[in-house]
Length: 327
Image (cartoon, rainbow, N blue to C red; front, top):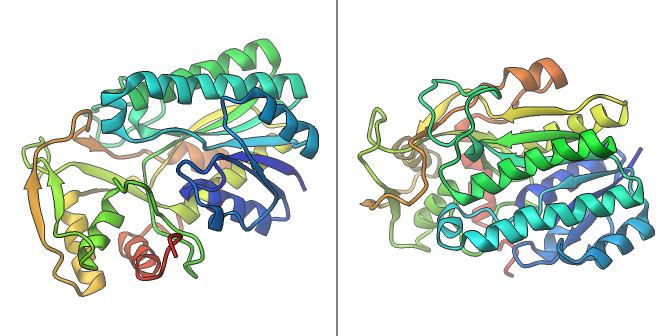
């Protein structure tokens, strides 16, 4: 069993990864500055409070806990914000990761599981996007993640770093018992926004654009349950602990849903009317992103077992009806 430093471990995906690690017998050490994470989500292992750009805080964490590996989730991730403030994204996402990698190198930690994104692909005309598809990000967020992927390869060549890189498609859902879930400040993800409209916490859900080159004019995305995502990270870690080589793999299910389809399924699952209206496109949004998940199955034996859209909405609905982390 391994001690794993989890950057961003108080966030949405990071907290579910910490839970999966703890359930498998590992020790997740959450490293977070709580700008976007939640203290109430830190419940599966020790906490180190610190910023990724703070080399002294990272050095202290490595010295105190002596992790065998790192899971790296800490990043800024709002597409529209990255278009408006690219410098902040390059500083935090790329500069922060460089600080982390140098701290890992100096501490002798050579295993990393990295949270990347399907945004590295940009607009794609492929029905299913494989890992070797052209990488042409349409926004600074995707560009910073692609830059980090290159940085990992360079550290691998120079210092022997082995990394499993996961390119996520759209993450949804919550822990089945609703102890941890999705809550952002501000919220930008479709399913929790739809459920806020279902609860009357917002007037309507806004569909950003209805003139995309898709069957119903709305953006199409591949949705994956956060529990399936966490399970993949555990498999990626175990690959590295066994001495396995670096890997870059997509995480998704290979089926896309439009914004309109998600709203309709949410109406059915919740039994609520959910008012909706059309708004302008958001800058940097690709029309369609759907995953080819074959490599993760072949290399890790991973399958998305929880990622039926109705189940993801139902789990998120149970979480949304509770107090969340604000109580």
